[in-house]
Length: 228
Length: 245
Image 1 (cartoon, chains in turn red, cyan):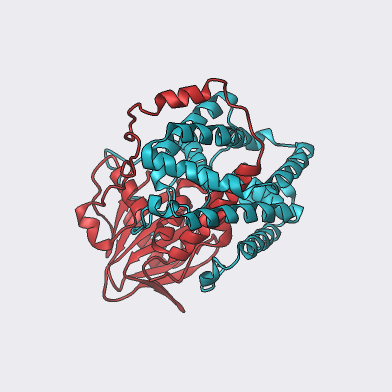
Image 2: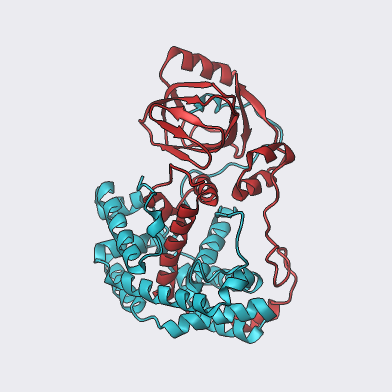
């Protein structure tokens, strides 16, 4: 099923140009893995890149460049020899995450973690797996998050851009429902309150480029709890 | 949402940190105040993108098919002669020094050799495929990380599709049309695309550099892409259900 909420055209252009931060690129790559129209849009945008490469300025390569390349064609590499359509097959996500059908770009990130991932309790009803170290306030937080059905996320603002990409279950906010493959991107200054839909665990990729700004006493208490 | 869990307790072996800023392409500093050269580059690019022969594109697909099917070294040599200078030109434009550009060009061309079977002519042009490999290799070089890419679960065998003559022709025609369409874009729309693809700029960076409101730049992007889609015609008709934001 095609998702309802997508990255903007501009975001996809920045991705295609290679300007996206790694965290945003992961979000878009995961979305496009679940969304055929966006995958097609990216293909079109990369075709534009191809046309520009094709028609752009050329630089002469070194005189022996072709000879060197030919000489190394048969050399075994870290990625396997010629014909290796399978040489970069994505690793499977860990067994305990299998029920959530995580897209392959995310499975690659999980496989590259220094330790086997496992859920960490973060808040009542919320567990997380850190995908990126974020020790300073200004560093990007990249996490896989599991919300219990019915959990309410108190009203809050964003210190920076936030991306939430849903894999299972759903997140509801007034007038909208984000299900599998849906991307909710919020810029700084957009306040919102969200609720996890009843019935199913909600697993999502959550990227935060700035610190939390809770807007209620309860939110502040929860933050203090999480930091304790 | 969920900033309340940003302070996660420390664990002994932490994942690496992901830098927040976009890729620090060296070219940004290099191009400061080089507006005159810029305009020349636009003219060059526009002139050159207008002159792409359909025969060449079909030929490039045929080379890839030959490499995938029977490790054809002669086909690789032809592909190398045709495209390695373009790949290197792109890397240099993105700020790589000549030495680094030479090494990365080698890597890109060897990746083409190894992964030729993954090229899918029904989904894009040879140049587009080379462009993405080059972009990803440069990201990997600068950031020591893999540029995440979409991976759709079920795909037709690329070699099967690429070897069908109608697909080869469609790919070639698409490429020629796209090249012409790029050449016809108004200069300010062409400039946004050039900065996005040749300099790895975000739209915000382009807006700041050109002293334009971000909204104006976004509008130019949408107009440019809408125009290109019209030229490519029909292929995206079923995308109508995708909202623009």
